[in-house]
Image 1 (cartoon, helix red, strand yellow):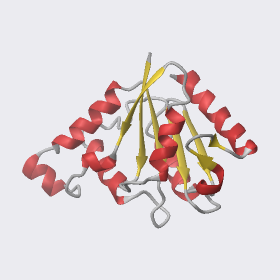
Image 2 (tube, one colour; image 1 turned 60 degrees about the horizontal axis):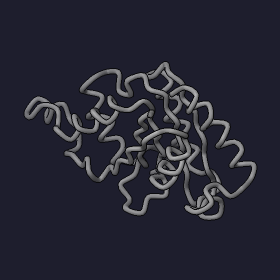
Image 3 (tube, rainbow, N blue to C red; image 1 turned 90 degrees about the horizontal axis):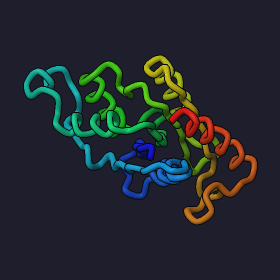
Image 4 (cartoon, helix red, strand yellow; image 1 turned 180 degrees about the horizontal axis):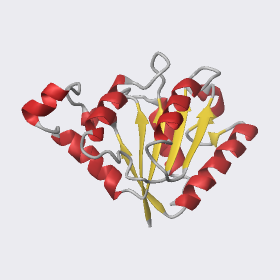
Length: 177
């Protein structure tokens, strides 16, 4: 059975991106899903000085272990002012100090959603463009616009064209596992 680590790149307790990441990961047949909450990995803001004083934060090491143990990674990005959330960026900064191979060359399904019509597309573009240089494995992506109109926890993605596009990306990710 394949192991997938999934998380919403947000610290919101009611994160719609965590809901989307959980949904996506659980659509992969014969996979076990480890849904992470970024709030469980809250650390001081990364700085070289903090690293010199105390070394790599233990929560960064723990987060990286989830990545190492997984066969694939699903991330759904919250867009904060057109970029990553501070919570995600801080974890990303810390784990990048452990090993330059941040994502351990694992297949990735990158997502984004928002209540608005662009569905977090700006942050998703940033992530895809950054990660494709950091990870030579399969990276698929999907943006879900207007989350509250197009998604329900019972039905999943409700709009047919969006559901089809999602399934195509999901299948490519699943095949790479």
